[in-house]
Image 1 (tube, rainbow, N blue to C red):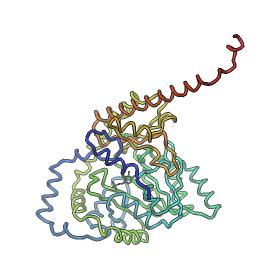
Image 2 (tube, rainbow, N blue to C red):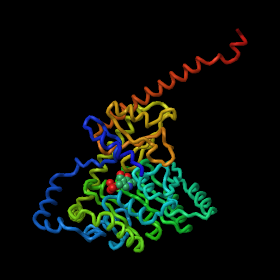
Image 3 (cartoon, helix red, strand yellow):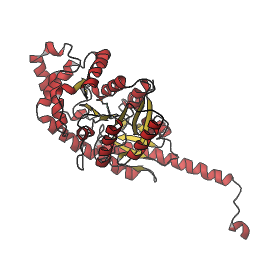
Image 4 (tube, rainbow, N blue to C red):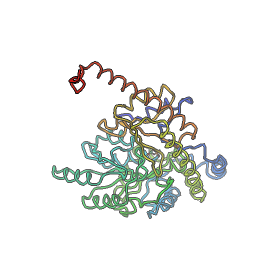
Length: 411
Ligand SMILES: Cc1ncc(COP(=O)(O)O)c(C=O)c1O
């Protein structure tokens, strides 16, 4: 078992004086309290006994039907029967890994990958192979080569896990051409893809791309979704869409884990998504988060040290930044916490220690002025570390005997 960096940071970042750019928290303060009260009032009047009761392991029908609708908003056509409601997207990752992985099985994922998935993969003793990503997502050439190398050794991965749209933590999106190639490779090698898509509806600019699920039609792609980022993380509702043989095992796995997802929160979400205003709320979030993303990018240009790089994600909740390689972001985090600001160090997104100069920065959870102040503080400690390094290295050079050169000859 390995802990997740994000969870470790939760306790510290819950302190009100800390500006947390660490978690992937949606801004729940934007949710209209009247809409919440209206759902609770309806429940009180009509369904107290039902919501206080157990429900079916695969989820209540109303929610499964609403999931069909939410996925249709991203052009996916599914059958409610193929949906298993889970306790958040995190349980969806856990269940699919539990069902598919035996100890020592190979599992392929992005490099960097969602930091919360790695502890899950490792807890089922998967042999995790990470495929490098660039601005267009997973490098499919490298994947192809890796599959060929593994096949030559008589090994085949159980599945390829990817967050192709507005990736957590990298913010990048898999290009259309790579999406097509990934789906084709999965078919050719008969390997499942697990597409995790919490952020697809949170697009701030650019054209939507088809999901892997819609390109494949649900044959080799198992789809994971969640309401956490478009409604609420506290309701803990996610889902898996999978072919029947996998769904049956997922339901057995879920029954062994928690019997069913909260009937109360399912009832809330099911009725909430029945009404069309859920789209308006997503539009509101898109407007708010776009402004915060821009505030973060602007502040980074102003405060981050020379030699740093970062991307401008077209959607989602994260910017991925890489500082000059003399800076270790785990050390930097310790100093940044001293200044009351937190981020996720890059190493949490890899199994092998890569990402030591990188960091994940979240822009959804705090307001623009705090984002700017948080980035200013991180930039200040990063520049302090850099100038310390420069001082130390130039002192070292002064200790070295003078190099022979033209000046020497001249002397
Ligand atoms: C890629 C990805 N998958 C799954 C999850 C977990 O989602 P949930 O909060 O619904 O459990 C997250 C949360 O940030 C995520 O970014």
